[in-house]
Amino acid sequence: MLFSTAGTCMIVPTWSVSDSSTIASAELRTFRKYPDQSAPAADFLDWKRTMSSSVPKRIGRYDLVTPMLPCKDEILQRFERFLMSGQYILGEEVRLLEEKLAEECGVPAAVGVASGSSALFLALSVAGVRPGDEVITTPYTFDATMEAIILLDAVPVFVDIKPQDLNLDSGLLADAITPKTRAFLPVPIFGAPCDMDPIMAVAAEHGIQVIADMAQAWGTFYDGRPIGSYARMSTLSFYPTKNLPGIGDGGMIFCRSAEDAELIRRIRGHLPVRMNGHLYTGWNSRLDEVQAMVIRIRRERFAAEQADRDKVAEIYDGYIPATNRLQTPNGGRGMKVTYHQYWVRCRNRDDLRMLLDREGIDTGVYYDPPLHHHELAVYCRTSGSMAEAERAGREVLTLPIHAALPFADAHRIGALVGQFLEQEAASTSA
Image (cartoon, rainbow, N blue to C red; front, side, top):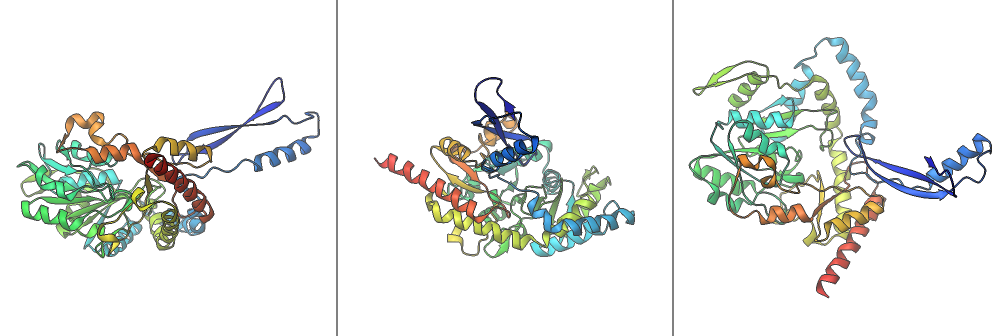
C-alpha cells in the first residue's frame, strides 16, 4: 500500500497473478486516508482488513491450486514412498500411466516423454518426416506445432481454419498437397474435435501420414471415438494448465503401432536406432516419474473436473449467441468437447476485454497474429487465403473456465458478455 504524503488518499493496488505466477495487471483503487495514523496498530489493521475485503477478487483464467487440494495428501504420501524406493527414472508410475492412458485412448501403446513439444518432434520423426518434406497444418495454434516441423528441417504448410470451430479446414487439404507432402498435422484446438474422418480419407487417398497434436484435447471425442485413436500417432501435453495436468512439463505419444512405440521408447532413452534405412539419434526425452505419479492421481478426478468445466460452458452458452461461439461438427452428435478454453467471437474484441478487465475478470487472446505472420514463417509457406485464421486472431477472446470456477462467477461473466454482444449486434443493425 502506498500512502500519499499530502492530501487525503492512499493508493491500494489489487494484483492479478497470471498462470505463469507473474504479476499480470494492477488495478489502482483510491480510499480515504485513515483519519488518525497515531491510532493503535490493532485498530489500523482492523480498518485495513475491512478495506481489503471490500476490493472485489479478480476472476483468473486458471486456478492451478484449488483442484490440487483434494489430491494433496495422497500426492505427499506417494511421493514419500517414491523417494524411498530409489526408482527415480522410468519406474512403475510411468509404466502404469502409459498403460492406463493407452487403454482410455483406444490405442495399443502410449509412451511418456519429456513434454508435449518433445512428443511432436519424436512422432513426426518416427513418421518419416525428413528435411525438405512438407507437413500441412493449421496457422491457428501454439508455436510448438510449427517449431517441431522446422526442427526437422521440414516445411510447415498452412491451410486456413473453419469459423465454426477454429480447426483446420479439411476441405482445403487436397489443394495443398504437393509431391513433397509427407504428413497432415491437425490440432483439435481448445479441446474441440477436428473433422477426423475427412482428414483420414484424404490422407489415405494420397498416401500421407497423419499425426495429431491433441495437446489441448485429452478426453475429446469425434464420432464416438477418442480423438487420439485416429492418427498413426497422437501427442499430448501435461502442462499444468491442461485439463489433465502435471506439476511441470510432460508429454505422451499414443501409437497405433507397437513398432512405433518401441522405437520411441528407445530414442527417448539415448539409444540410437537404425530402422527402415534411417539412423535415429537417441536423446533424453523421458517422462519424469514424479510427474507421472501426480498425473495418475489427477486422472482419477478428471471426470469430475471435466463435468465442472462442462457446466461452466453450459452456463456461458445460455448467455452467448450460437453464432458467437463454438459450433461442433455434425451438430455435436458423437462429439465431446473438453473446453480447454471457452472462446467467444466479437468484432470489438478489445473493447470487450477492457470491459471485463474493469470488472475484475481476466481473459485471453490466442494466436494473434497467427503463425504465418511470425518470424519463423520464413521457413513456412501458406496454401491459399488465411482469412479465417486472421479473423480469429482479431476477434476471438477466451473466458475463464476451470474446475474451480464458481458457477455464480460464470453466470456473472456470461451475463456481461451476452449484454455486450447484444449491444454490438444492435449497433451494427442500426
